[in-house]
Structures are given as structure tokens and as C-alpha cells.
Length: 241
Image (cartoon, rainbow, N blue to C red; front, side):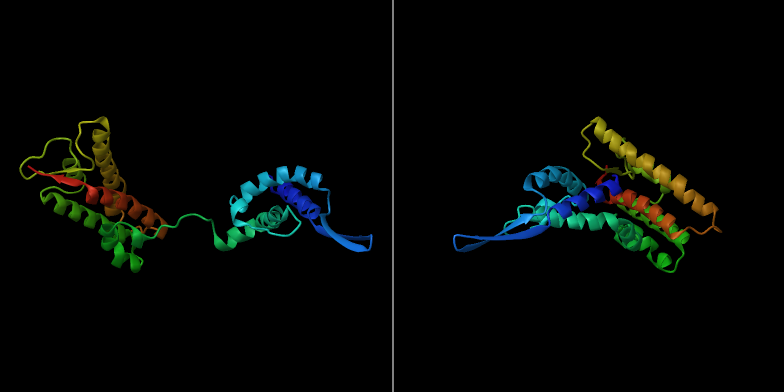
């Protein structure tokens, strides 16, 4: 958006819609009337452009701004224009002081397995070890779900989400019902591939870089990835022989 142009157009409209009072007398009566600074036809023409600006800056202006004023059909437009102008003029200041209006991720709101595994170390600022704790917790909970201790990490997930039928002592996890469809096979393969990436890209480097601490942001992103995998495991159905 050309902010300078938009502000200029709003300024014009605000000036055009200033209400003025006119009075007159005749036949023994005094009459009063209110009118806009610019002729109504000119205001209507400019409103066509201003409405497009308002739709971009304050999308809900038509329903959230009442702008009621007797004898002024442009009251809502005018109030919206004043607000939109302020929004544009002070947008940078607002961003600097409030930050972007974007969702924030809290480690405490990730899947319980992940936060439980990371919590104590995270709160003491040991982010690398916190991620490691979350991985161990995820691995243990997955083992518990399929009742296995003989495999772990990547191999555990490959076997748990295998497309093969379950065997004695080798239960399977199914994210969706096995209907033999391509979607079912894709979903199962996706978990295995994602898990392999998690252990190869997060778990392995952590175990070999013990002297390198993670930043809080990097560790949080790792926990988010682990949370996705934990949720998939937790929501999967167990298929045993």
C-alpha cells in the first residue's frame, strides 16, 4: 500500500465531511440546516476511493463503527477515516512497542509429553538438555504405547508405523484407519519419515555437540517439531496381534 497516498486521500475526505451549520429566516420562521464542507455529490465520489482504503486498513469498519449523527450520512465513513488515518500514521510506532500481531508459541502449551520431558531443564536455562529430555520422554512414551523395549528412536518409529501387519511382540500404530488407500499409506510413511528427520536432524547433533548450548528460540522450534510427532503417536490407534 502507498501509505502516503492513502493518508492524503483520508485527509481530503475528513476535511470534506466537516459539518457546517447554516441558518436562515423567512415568513417569520428561523430555519437551521447542517451540511458537509463539500457538496454531497463530491463527497460521494471521494467516498468510493476512501471505502477501498478503509477496507484495507480497518476491515470491519462497516459493522463495528456506528458513527451515528443526525443529518450526516457520512458520519460512519468520517469516523472510520479518522481511525484509519491514525492507524497508518502510527503503524510503525505500534509495531515497535507491541510487536507484530502474530501468534506466539509457548513451550508449556506443547504436547504434555514434550513439556514434561523438558520442563525442569528449560526453566533453569539448559535448553539443549531440555530438548534432549523431551526426546527421551517421547521415545519412552512411544515404547510404552507399543509395549516394546527392544527398539528405540528411529527404528522404533519405523517399526511402529510400518505398513506391515502386526506380529507377536510387534504392535503397530495407525494414525488413520487402514483402508488400503494411498492416503493411509502416505500418512504412515509421513510419520516414519518425519521421525527419521527428527532423530537425524535434532537428536544426533545434540548428542555430539554437548558443549554447544542452544538459543531459547532454536530450542523452542525443536520442541515444536517434537510436539507434532508426540501428538501423532498419542492420537494413533494400537494394532496388536
